[in-house]
Length: 221
Image (tube, rainbow, N blue to C red; front, side, top):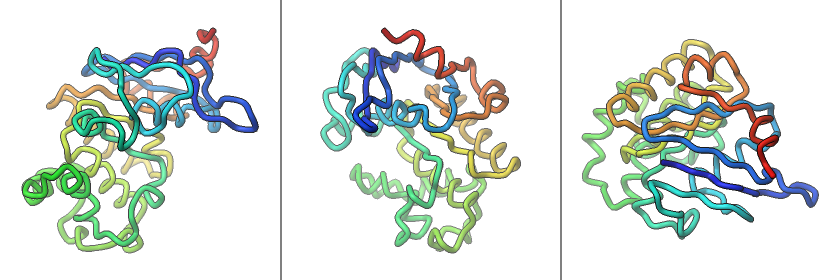
């Protein structure tokens, strides 16, 4: 279980971006978080993925409270999460070729020896062709780069996926392909999913349940 309880995080002009919000995602469950731009849902997603330390509240993963965030979290806990952000060009090192971009988490986890096998497995799953792997981000389209970013998120076989506006900048066919890749991985692995977005139709078709940001704010003390 991934549980966020009474989370307050981020400040803008002296006020918290997220205030007293709680959210739960069960193993294997797909939860959509629906809200307008700027409401704080991306901040909450970063807290859920242990990328942003909240000012107040707790994050419990599989029954244990997170002991730290970012590099201070234990490696086993950090690698339990795969995250895909809205803007792939901000999330990708422009110096890396796509093959190295995808394999980045393997190297960081000391599992470089798995690179060839994982690339061979993931590249077709996300809809990339082998000839793109030698290119750098500026040499591919946004859709192709986001496919590589999804492969990077999946490369360590995470138990939890956080997709923060993953398809907001993409066309309908690429959106469908990426959602299908996520769902195939979830069906095979039993991973839980938090999908953040502002497209109600997409989230309601994709997820088991969709939570509106307004409802989270109303439930907050």
